[in-house]
Amino acid sequence: MEIDALQIKALRQQHQWTQQQLAEMCGVSLRTIQRVEKEGNAATETVMSLSAVFEVPQQSLLVVPEADSSSWQPINIGKQTLSILFALLVGIITGGALMYWLLSA
Image 1 (cartoon, rainbow, N blue to C red):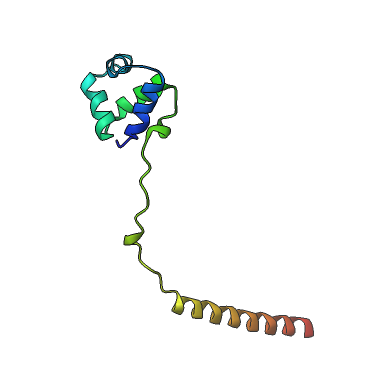
Image 2 (image 1 turned 120 degrees about the horizontal axis):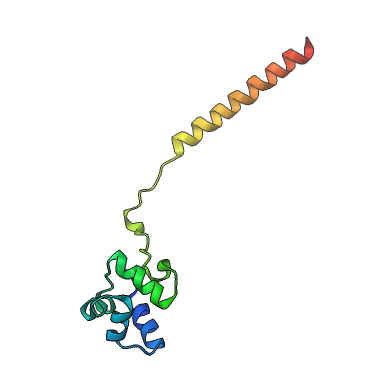
């Protein structure tokens, strides 16, 4: 799971804890905390432990990926727009004729 490594380090330093102290409080190894702060990768259980120790929601520790707009495809709605307008016109004419027929009877 990708987490914000800088935020983890900042929270730890804010509490004035060493990496070893944080590791003990979370019930993980010192190496795990070092990896989290360096690489930003953590298992779900580690994220749960960190959020409990820091008393913050798990979502606040996660990195939200940015949308990659380079892979988006443009949508051509030219034909659909024409079809919708034609159907709307036919509906208006048909509805008007039907109302005229019903009211004149």
